[in-house]
Amino acid sequence: MKKAGFAVFLLIFLLAFSGRLEAAGLKVSPASFIIHDVNPGKPYDLYKETGLRLTIHNDDDVSHTYLLSTHRPKGKWEKGYLEIPDAGWCWFENSEITVEANGKGYGNIYLKISDEEKYYNQHWVVTLKVAGKAGPGGIALAIEVRAQIETKSKADVKEKPDGIIATGPSTLRFENVSPGVTQEGKVTVYNNDNKTHTYKLTSLFHKKGTKPNTYLTHSYQVMPDSKWITLSKDRLTIMPNSSSNLFLKLKIPDKPEYHGKKWEETFLVEPEEGLPGFIRVQISDKE
Image 1: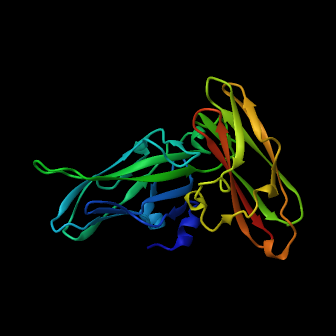
Image 2: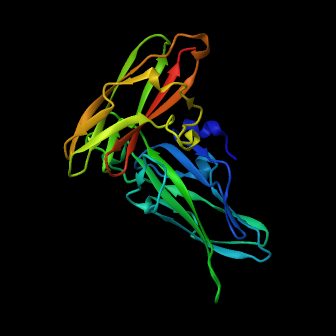
Image 3: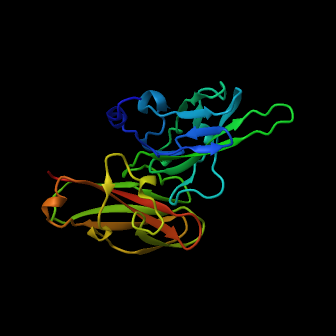
């Protein structure tokens, strides 16, 4: 496994969730993962740069051949993410591998987002599929791993971000924060739909049923109290193909235990109908 610091240096932060998916002798790990700060136009070899690859476990007593492919997601997935526009931006080094009996094989993953300004500030999901190659009269088992891909956050975009809903920047960073001192920031929310929407803003990490590890960036912890951040509005009504600014104020209580921390909060931006987005807020305190 590569050193974790190497991934941070390359501005591609990765969190592989524990556990693996299983289907009658076929097991795949990790069960899901998230990648942050992906630069559009830059090619990534995830194993070379982060140490991540899919591990395929064949627990059968005979060898099996597996087909590896990438797809836009179906069904339900993590709140705040949209379908990746092109699943072909993510691919495997080999589309077919054979794993010996009671052995394991590896699927090396590559990634390159189209080099366009509109693809900054994106939160996407792509499905990585591992399917057994069925023989005559056989049944092909398949497992799908969800990958969450977040492109680099950028405030000064030259065109509106892609997607039915988007924010810019997608991550608002408060750095060298002094507890007890108020800091302010601004995020633009884009309604790229052809009709007006009213968006409700709520803390995603503190929402019932949310698993924070599904979203957290490497080295950050969940901010203990979402009320440390005040939003200028808890609802935004935005006309079709328009945008609106949201202002945020941060004030951390001046207590010794709150000094020298790295916290993260996420705010779900949820329309009355349709898919939501989210704003990521990162906070680093002064020592």
